[in-house]
Image (cartoon, rainbow, N blue to C red; front, side):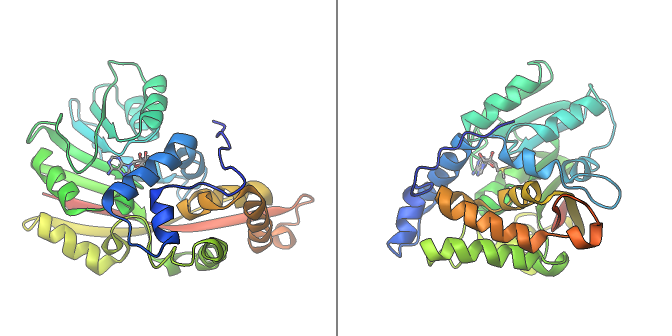
Length: 305
Ligand SMILES: C[S@@+](CC[C@H](N)C(=O)[O-])C[C@H]1O[C@@H](n2cnc3c(N)ncnc32)[C@H](O)[C@@H]1O
């Protein structure tokens, strides 16, 4: 899947980045507008990055999350913020008798999901996660959410909607960023990219996408326990990584950081060159071409209602 390069010479802009430039706290509408802009122009980028990184068992993060779904005929699964549909595809390929639904707010992402799956394999809806109007109460056995919960603000209505649509013994499982210290050099990659981004927008980082409470295990637990007071909540940690020609590894690593999309093409090239040096493992690998490795901490939140 090749992404269109839409960044003009100043990089990607939105109401959200304008607010940051003017030292204003963006509101939830500005957040949605920013995310729509990124995904409109780079549809499918999450899948491109996330499907290439694997854990020790050889699973990518979609496959790790998909483990939560049992192979029971007729299980009703909702993929919340399904993007281009990689998780739905994995589930459908594994068991054609699952009843799959996907929602996302971005039409360009949904178009990719629709193109890869037949109409009878999945029902797709253009909806915001805060208001799942087309999904009935108690109609879903498992809600999955791969790498999108961290982007949602306000988050409380999302968790309330998940609770509403889940059946009485339903489960909610989300793939989210793991603890920053969970993988070697991950914080160096983060700091390098944010260093470039902050030289353009100094408050990027202090202000970030989504509700900050999703990014720490304690506050996440509190939030989820408020929405699901009776539920059993667990968080498991894992590491996914990739190796390859260092320029490809750097591109993939940068793709996990929404912040990197606001850089102008020139600055982005400089950032990628520095990132390539950071991720270079040519000496250890003995490879003739420049070889790189990127590792990323991920967590799987599981809520049993
Ligand atoms: C990082 S991508 C993940 C896409 C897909 N789950 C995957 O992992 O490939 C985030 C997705 O969340 C969607 N999204 C973000 N906020 C949303 C919201 N409030 N309601 C619905 N979709 C949202 C975006 O449109 C985008 O497709």
